[in-house]
Length: 199
Image (cartoon, rainbow, N blue to C red; front, side, top):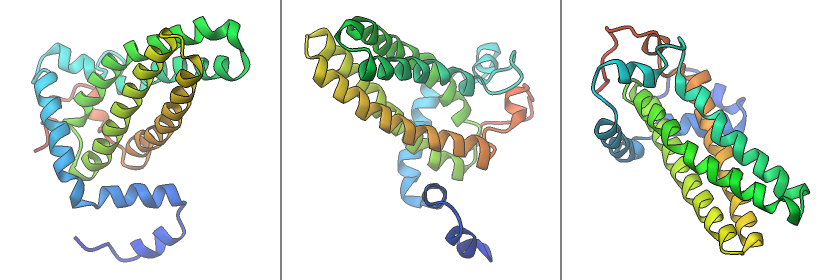
């Protein structure tokens, strides 16, 4: 699909990261990945009912996923601070924070997958990359926890810091979905029964 008039000029004046996100939106090469993520979402997320509504944030009145992301990110940020300035005496606390962050991934990811079923194709492409990056982040933090538990603290810290950087890139895409693309639609969290799963 060709760019709308003025899109190229607008992109030239946009920040680099925003231009990259827009390229993801327009990349048919990501449709295979987005189809895989959609398949996972369909397998894990209830097709209807109260649980499905709560995964969207019905009781909150806005997307639950956006709220839950603060939990693992906050835990991992705290771990990074302890790793960088806390010294050896903070190692046990940092390890616990990393592990708790990994445990918080499951509900956070499930709410994200629920939202994924209600966004359009452009948003699904960005969301698929967001999901893939988050999967990598989770695996890296899991590896960091195992390294720390096995007494290899320095290696564990290095892996954590790499994961934190990757999480930042993923968070940018999550923000792009919510702020630039306005996905998922507000009606999803508000429980509008007329909002169907998008094909």
